[in-house]
Image 1 (cartoon, rainbow, N blue to C red):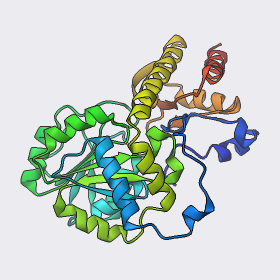
Image 2 (image 1 turned 180 degrees about the vertical axis):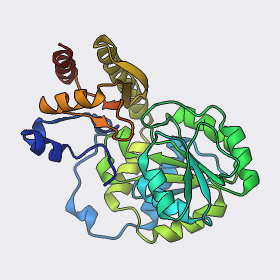
Image 3 (image 1 turned 45 degrees about the vertical axis):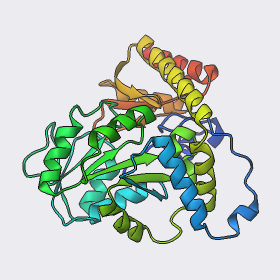
Length: 327
């Protein structure tokens, strides 16, 4: 089984806590939920309509500031696109710099591609995946334009996974790469809006790939609740701006706690902070025993990622637990 954040209920049972008593900091999902109205059962009675899908796609184009020359396709979370994209092209070699989100390498390998690592894309690679900013390290690849140019000449694909990308910075990436047909941009809806369970994500592509992606997704790929939530939330500019400020503040507070407990932060975003420590596995185990669930990486055992606590009480709970481990 590939490791992911979440499953705090399983962790709670393992460490002797009730599910609601385990503080889940293992994901990069906002602890604050977009204030949707209650969902009625009538919402689930009919199949998703073309009009509701179009409205959601238009809202995504607005929120993410997608250039007109790109097509926006909605799917059941970005995971749906990760499994489809490697099958758009003939098998070859894909460069995926590690460490990063582990589903990318799995999905490309599952489709028959060869995976290569390294700080620089090797000449034998046909395609590349760049998580921007990277998960879990938070760093940003320095020259997307040169990378896109190289892959365009090869006739390959460049995937920009912007699951943790700010909309303003995302608009800059769109502008920088607007002339390349090889680029597929991915965006996650649920992380920022605290609604990961609705399963909604978007792929922004040149028209050359959009029809194939939609065909592989099949009809009714996004459910009514996700379409409704996406349409409302992605158009709420005031809430988005305010929420971004709240997340940045919480992330800064989290960083202070980690630094003040002598943990070395290697990077982060407005939704997580990641440390490097030789005793990260020991810290993870200690926190779990005190009812705090974090994200570790068995392949990179010195890395540990912390999602955002919701409030001062959760911040203090984390701080106190780390202090006890330090003592």
